[in-house]
Length: 270
Image (tube, rainbow, N blue to C red; front, top):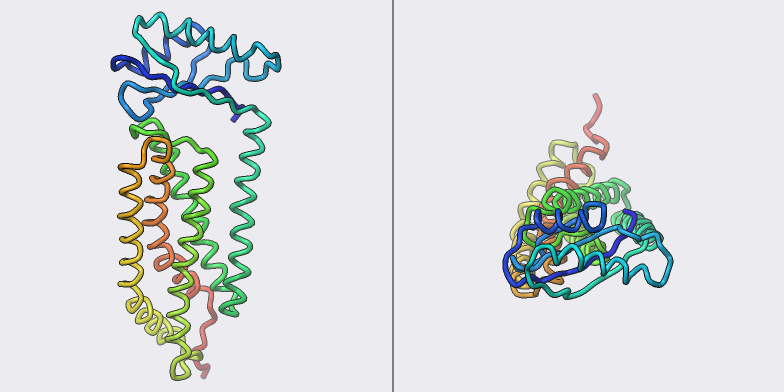
């Protein structure tokens, strides 16, 4: 991402994004990114025109070109907001986002390892976290421009990713605690692999209702925020909705199987 300027424009009537893009392409000399932003009469226009120009009048030149292109549509409009993200700032945001996710995974691995005294639990949790992040990121990339609200990867998205990771980790800790409780009960820590899998399955079934009820409670709250919270936080709420669903099943269907597969088979040898 090289940075760019974004403008939220509201028209008096519904105007196709293709017509707006064509009009601004002729004005800017390059094709801007045009997306519907919330209401059908509102669009978000992002352009890299003169983004590397450090002069003080660069902003005025871009706005003049924007006005020149929009006037050709012969539709009344109003620029609701504008924002500039420079190339250096965009690189900084990307680097900090990557480091935030990686450091979070490392800290969580150490926490799980210390809590459960086994590296398999830590690795299973971290793999589940990477899975959650990749799924949410993939949904944003695939449906960007398809869904009728903004799915841009901004600071809000990074905050949502870290929130999803925290939720997934807490869910994994609850599941692992129940597994440890069942395995240590009646000296079950040294069972062979088949019996161990059976005990872990009982532990998962015992915590399944709690996991689903917690996920549904948070999901309904976030769904209400997604519907009534307004356009500015709709992308954030959508990321959390996807993350809650993914995080709920990953703690059971990804983290736990990895723990089982990586633990040594303690079957008695002949």
